[in-house]
Length: 174
Image (cartoon, rainbow, N blue to C red; front, side, top):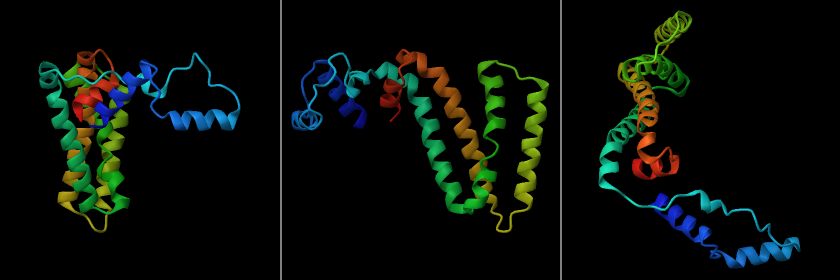
């Protein structure tokens, strides 16, 4: 809905139809100088909102990953203390490197792998030292890290489907 409204506002801005003429008039009266003629409206950056079922089907896996990311983030926050939340979510970088290799075929250096071992070791120490340890909360944090990583990988994969326009991707994903 928000993307559709932004698209409609962008259409009006491109057509140079004043949307809030009273605000524009009061702004002009307050500044006593006309608005710059060459400056485009803020809403002109939003593409026209149109939905294609074929594009929606190609972006649907990203939407599922997005829902998983939000769900497990909230479950983790509910089940662990805020101080432990960052420890529970610290494996995102590990999953990023793994999924970049597994899904995109990009390799990482040995130095990167060694740094990831330190992150995993820190995760284990942080989990072991937690006073109010919750297995379910920690699992939700790990799953949240997994879905955050998958969200970034899938976003990189499906952005060309919408001509690398992040506003269109937001429209389809939400």
